[in-house]
Length: 514
Image (cartoon, rainbow, N blue to C red; front, side, top):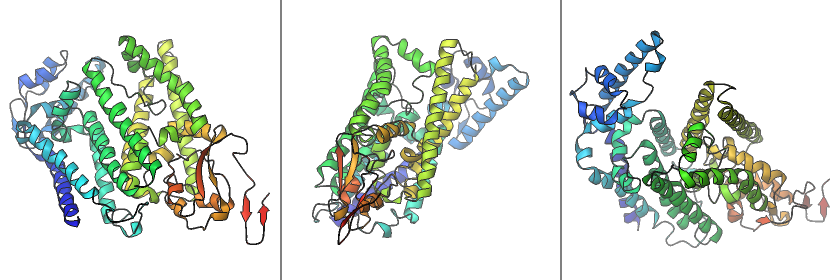
């Protein structure tokens, strides 16, 4: 089995290396035909003039082609801005569109082959490495030697992995033209599902889903014997594959709005933006249902389900961010900061983002009904800054890229506004709690070590005190790794849920601390 794992690792690394090298393969030639097919009708004539110097010129480097395209368009726009001809400025980003459309070479000629080599092969390699894991070992969660691992303990391999993820997210969000070839290999899948060529977001959605599915198999191996963890992993895999990937893409094929039916405001911060509302209202019965469904989730489903089950119904069973954290991020869950200072920072940050989302949404709704009387066009600037700071930099670059440095729930813990909303309900009005049997606690610290939300679970367990924290996502790993059965996830009546007078059990007596 060891040889199979080595072979799988070689396949994975080779496929990942090929995927990373795709942006450097091939050439670009911008022709009049390509430009007219991809430019807006009102921009076509202008762009033919702007790009006249690079028309029919073959570039052996995508980077050089992108530099010239951006340079020419920026010079044109700067000239118009100096003359204050704002209506004639071309705000559209043509760099990605034209780079992808003008590319030619092995990737474009053999797209299917490169899809297999750069995607299917590394997936097969990863599975070949995962399946033999813990083969001859008894059931039970395996966390052996994690603090001696170069990947899991902020070693050199973890640093390389985190750096790669950070660079990938930066390029994906703000410089997609540089990975046009990588996106190109997803065209066959995108055309099959939605009827459109792949965009950067389709590629991201596909990779995101595959990461949850493949690493979900690893969870099956690592947590075998723990029914709760297996079912929970199946749940996040199902919701990501169906609700977040397949169904939204199929909606596009039928000329309906792309919509993730499990994504809830304020995590889905653009739900009330003007273009989203207009899109839903113009999409007939389905569009109206999506609008009604989204509002229903916000005002009824979230508080009601959080009352009965706490945050875990969403954060650990449904959410895509949580799904990635629980699968791809599982090897790093022990890296979360457990210090009191981190908790203090967490409270201000996550609730600050929640307030930001509320204010932005209130302004947006007010402007929608008042004809932008409140902030006017500055509303768009507010949207852009939130999207840049929270939706992209925080949720993506930091939220995933920092897995190997700060643990798997950086975004959920410090930045997710929906987690804050659910957490408020869970803390003050919910039946959910983690009960503790302090008399059985041996202070091994496993519970605190593997809490991805940075909760010092042992502190509560030693005192026999119920764990009722707004940040707890109810993943149940603390209970699963406890060797004495001290912790138990429960949904009971709210009376007595918060016991502020813990019972300390000693050798001679039982003492109630007031």
